[in-house]
Image (cartoon, rainbow, N blue to C red; front, side, top):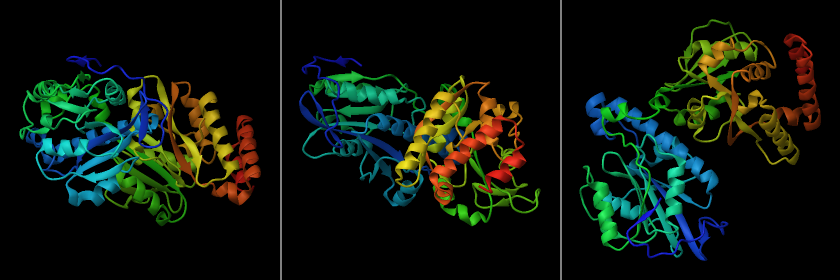
Length: 463
């Protein structure tokens, strides 16, 4: 980004080491950096009204939710590399706070928008953050279809040597505004529609004596024709099926489902596959987003049954004792963006604070990175086309995950999501950490030796 107007500020060094959240030092000055995300709860009839005029209120709200969830995923990725930046979800309406907190968890705090026109609310947003330190505030919306994490990084870098930054939208508005100096004048107009909004803001900032950097032009989605021009539209059309094999009562999964269901994207689904009872029993609907089907006992058999039951084109195989990070559906969809990856997984972590378990997780992550060999407790995911090409899980009872991964490696690379998936250490605690680890490695060796998985299954659960 380059500054427009006379550059009155010497270019400051890059952001230094964080001194304590959310302040950093830039050029010897203490600076608080805040990223404010404007969002409206995705309720049909209250969001994307111009888009709704062409496709209906419910589809428009569903597409807005996809845009919103993608934006929050990008913000979470940005925060992973910039933990000195405070993230604020500036939401509306105020009475939907409980639903917003439930549906959109992440590394941010929640602040309700005040009343007033959009300019007044943006001014209030820029006043959030640390009180005494110099403040760099960046405000973004949630309806840009091609926003990238680099746009946020570029904006904060620009504020190191410019007074303001604008991210122009193709329709003449802007999707991002950042300020290193206060400028109330830019927020005074009551009207924020039309093709002149970005130009007006730029002229106002320059008239007030601020130097301004311009970011990359991005696509604002307001009308049906905007969808036709959206790069990577296929990404938004993909659906994820979370397939969870389990034994025992489905009530054991209530806590996991309470975490997963609110974070699903529109049309995503959860399929529970019970290994208890008669196969072929009619599907039981647990909720609007979750249904249960029965299969013969055996994790490979249950996973294959779940795929047959699903209607989605992205398949995510999740263990019942594992909890993924927030924004998990965004991370799984990253597989769509790469032509070189056939399979994806998360890094592994265990619940609790055991040093021995931390070492086991560290070894698992090293094995995954170097050997491209994750296990099932890392949340393996793939496209349905990949699953079909591999003829599904070929081992019925045990080591189905390793066998599937080894086959998939011939089709492409492994995508590793850096955010960890946390799994229960119950088996390690029950059997003893050293013994359970040795059994796992011996099991892998016996699998490589070609031992039948029925025998391996029987031996494993006797240990």
